[in-house]
Image 1: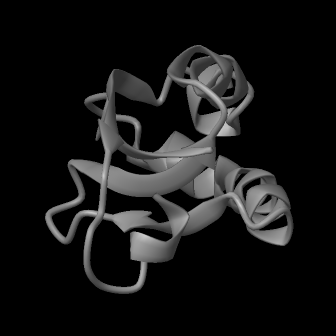
Image 2 (image 1 turned 180 degrees about the vertical axis):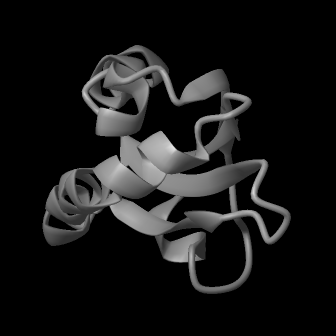
Length: 96
C-alpha cells in the first residue's frame, strides 16, 4: 500500500449542493475509515476545497474509487490532484 494526498478544489457555487450531499459524502468516506484506508480528511478553512489522505494499492485504483464520492458524482469538485506521499515522521509514517 502507498499513501496518497488527495486535494479537492470545490466547484464555484457548489456550497448548497455540498451541504445537501455531505451526509452521503461522509458515509462514503466512513467506509474507507472502517477499512483503515482513509487516514485523515477535512475541508480547507477558507472553504475552497479539502485534503484527504488515503492508502491505496495504486493511484489508478484510488482515482477509480474517488469517482464514486458523492461530491464527484454530483460535480461539486472542479479540480482533483493525487500525489503519492512518503511520510517519514509522525502519525502517518507507519503507513508508508
